[in-house]
Length: 234
Image (tube, rainbow, N blue to C red):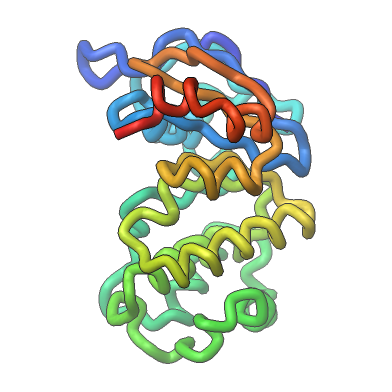
């Protein structure tokens, strides 16, 4: 579904992502791992078209799209949930969900899609008329994921979804990712909770200083404490 080749990205003169290559197959969960500052978030932002200075190749579902704008990638079926969630203040949970279809051809199905997504996210179903930003951090994270799922993307990019969230909601979230995979959604996950991420992933790549330094099956990396301590320990 996704093949990234020789990807480079810069912020001004800072060369953050340096000639990385990786792939994600349809129906997989693949995790990008590494310490803070390794280039993981920049990789996702570049893939979504949110970094201006970039180079290389990114073929998504058969289409080269590295130089396409973000909205074009959205219409191809790529969704992105940023680390800061970006729940819109003053809007209810329902209205925030509706934003997920505002640029989609499925807008006429908006009410049906809200109902369907609410069934997948029981916590949100109970709070559809509550202001989104009044919920807990974990509930807002679920709302951000649900909003991205409204357009039924082929693949979703998730940036640090468990950061700052209470353990019980982290458990719910990772169970949700597993269900999403079973339902056919492909996931590229950036996550600091190494053990939890690897437990649901098929494969993983480790970034260090903007370069991929290790790749393998999730199970192999889960069992390799030396690699984890070398590249992922805080």
